Image 1: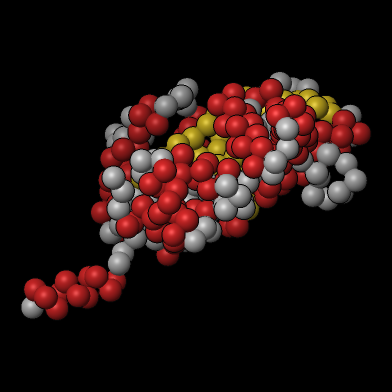
Image 2: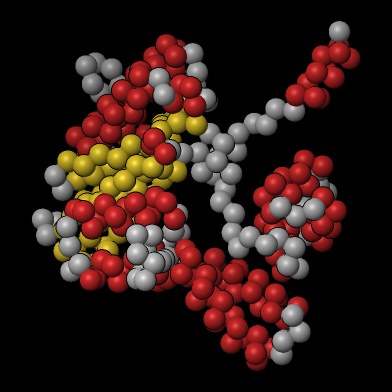
Length: 291
């Protein structure tokens, strides 16, 4: 139904004890997401959310050219290669080519021809030269009008890249908002854009927690609303407390400076990618047994 490695993974994601993780997986037929919810409902997993484990290396790049901008991610196997000048130059080159061509998918970018060679060919050549797999994972192009401004920010040396578009205000204000997005990892711009399934899941978990506290159902329903509002303040960019001034929300900060946030894009290197975990003890034992 589930393996020991599943128990280990659940423990790493939730911080719960080994026995509790085993019980959670048994109760949910080995379903990892349901097991996380089960632990949270029991009050065992304390964290309100866990980001997908970031294991892949690489760089995010953000580039603006007039009313066009792009944020992209290119992955490498090691952080050492991500700092290699050839790799960094290729990421910069890729950003320029995306802005210069009418592309909307990774496949279209890879098919761009430059000096009788496609981007895909250049990627293969770079992989061969560096000796490590290089992959172009994703990108997003953003457009704005003349009365709007871009705000961009790269965090941790390019491990995180963020772009926001503001109507009104100025580039300095927009950069502050992009910095907020990069640092605080909002899920959505505002509560209207939070996926319905995420809200439903959170509501269910909160209700189970409240009911477990012995509250009547009608009281529990009111408490769900209150805790959901707190949840929105954590995951919605506009509702987050502004990191440079805790007395205002991000939305208020922008409005106080004559602006409105129109959109946000945030990439973090490797989010959602699971990197192979080497079990060195088992590897050594295997070598001894086979010698």
